[in-house]
Image 1 (cartoon, helix red, strand yellow):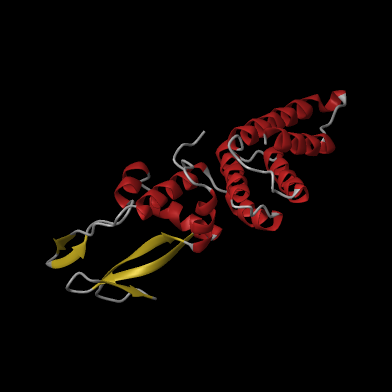
Image 2 (cartoon, rainbow, N blue to C red; image 1 turned 90 degrees about the vertical axis):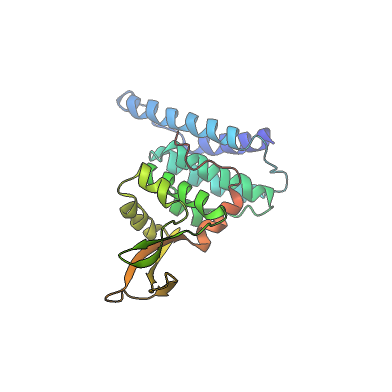
Length: 222
């Protein structure tokens, strides 16, 4: 498997090439460093993958996209995540450049904090939700949201990070209002005189990506 992937990636890198003139030696060194990093990531993430049924043309298109992202300085963790998506697609015999490009356009632009916040939200979403209620100003309210406590501890500004993730299509939001009995109801606008809050959640696009990234540690920024 590594011979298949390594050979195709090597061919793509040789086609891309790097500047070789004396005036471009610094660029040459930087590009080689980023190419080597990409090869290391690909071979590491694909070690257990099954690419025997993958279409070579699709892989070439995908690798050219990965090379471009690596050359532009996309963070290592993002590249690892994209490589894991490709590996998962291969396991499901679903390697398609068009599908991967949709995910890559989103994943390549994530900041380090955004990747970590996503990881916390994912971890909270897959746990059984134990709802606890308490009293606030004489009103029964829900006091626990999945992942919220950890988000508060690690990122005091976590709400702004979640808001920034809305642009990616990986996170959406709704407004939750609580009536006098503490029962949460979805609202399209904030109601006056009612205790309400914005609730962020994962989208179907994020769930698609999760199908291909089993066991990927979003909280392990490298």
